[in-house]
Length: 244
Ligand code: URA
Image (cartoon, rainbow, N blue to C red; front, side, top):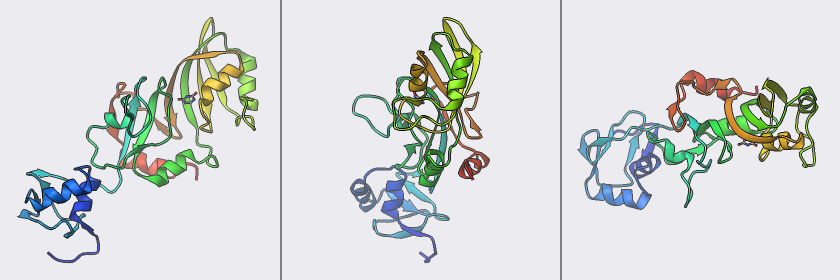
């Protein structure tokens, strides 16, 4: 096989693509279950060009992806973690993933639903989560109690939620107000239970919370809770320049 500039070990390639642990994969390779460009290979240390060569495991082609980006409509009841002994995680919902190193960009509470990005791109995660970038996160919420103009003013000034500092100014738009009220909220940080604590500081209890946008990226309206789709290249590129 010819040497190339982009070379990686075949066992690493298959492990990154989620085909098993490194030692399981070494066994599969040694037992002749892996082919590269139609030829059986038996050495786990064999280096291949992941950008051009075709790899198959037990007859199934395994494509390579260096970075993956998904938009998930997180349903309530699922936790924002990579694995958990008890509960279903958001990673369990990304069924078509290639890579084994995906993670959720930030967290939504177990009972919160809506837009969650899943990737293995640390740079994207940093851009969206860094407290210095102040990327907008927009939520729809239903609260117990009447939201009024005073609450809009408090959100605009920043709310004391018991942390060292008040929250950054946030936008509150009342959609309906009564014994149960509905509103759209835009915050620019990602503190623990932030939206719930901001409303609690105003004497209101959040019953339901749904994230609908992060920066310029909105939750795809065609997705149902629990569904995901890959980000388009344009969407991923727009997010990668978020906060610039
Ligand atoms: N704020 C909250 O209180 N919970 C979330 O899940 C997200 C923002």
